[in-house]
Length: 344
Image (cartoon, one colour):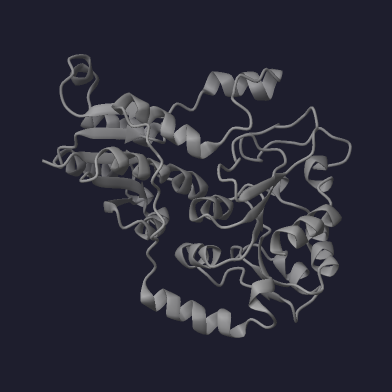
């Protein structure tokens, strides 16, 4: 009988994409494994990119605790052989309690279980007392692999390269995006100027300067509907900048990343998508600690400051006289040289 696995990771985009490396490891050891995944409903759509995942369970936050409990009971009927809690939050603990009760774990009954720790004590030591016990740079994709060693899963030599996107999505992107692009497509660069927290965003003025420094290149901006500052970048050279902020959904944006020549991004989910898709990228790393990529096709640009990293996700406060100095000091001139070198 094929082994059945459940992966629990509700959000966020970047963490889910990095966690998808677990599917590679599982299938390298259990080629016939049946893999299920539970994610937040609004995050679950792009997991369909990897058709090796047998079923994606979408959790609806609006249904609250009772909805989660009902879903846990439905999952229990699947009789999983292995459960991997890759989130380690209150919701995943509820699922764990139903699927793998502590007393069963003590007696070795039921599914085998492993969990990705958030290392909260290490985080307090790092961000409060500057005592760093993490392996730096901290590569999130590798941290999602570590807990699977408990199942004897260590081989990640074969990874997925066959990403699935619906034909209607491809046609829509061809008609609405690529047909509107002007200039030489091989000189098209994808920009991801937004991020969940403002402190880990490269300054808007830097993006504007970068566009000006590269007059022979065209640019495509991927961002959300609330990222109205992207209009300021577009206005620098409207004939060379296609601003797609708010015009594509998660799956469509992932498709555009997968079709890119070069991606430039801070610590975002789309940077990790480029990492997973093996697309060349330039990573702009500032205050955050855990957003470093794994692949050699991505180059990280950062400056050496004693205060780095100062936050796990960019939600903290900057202690420098020059606000966000760790990002400000990654200059447009530096990045422009890297773009030319990568695109040559």
